[in-house]
Image (tube, rainbow, N blue to C red; front, top):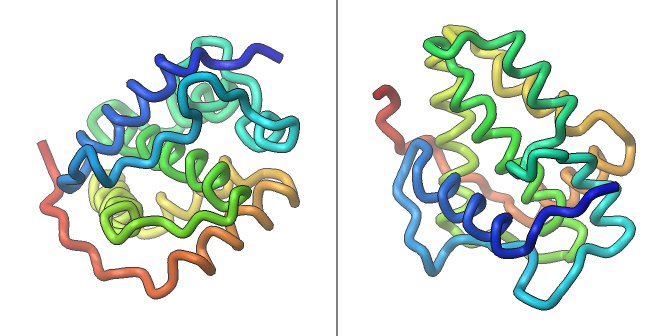
Length: 158
């Protein structure tokens, strides 16, 4: 299994969190791997195979690209997959998300449903990410730590 470069992962995470559906300051961004650390075996299993090191499992990326058109939520579906993947690492560590991270998660879900014109689109992407009992249970733990979730506050669209 190939691991993502720590610096490259940190840059990708920062870009995703700062760019999609809502503003998040750099101080609120969750960087899963500090320089000099490596993922545990469990975290590597949660993250999965990412051969192009873009912070999304290869199987999810291919499925999202085939199911969402570029003009109907593809970019936002990929952003949601990345946010949920990062939540897996945070949930595994027992770290509650910051208020900005919770808001970002809710906003990306909201925007994806609007862009895809399907109120189930975000649930479908989450199901792709949470395709094993370990991933689902770890995300459920993160979600428990995240409660209560805020209402969407993002204005969606280009």
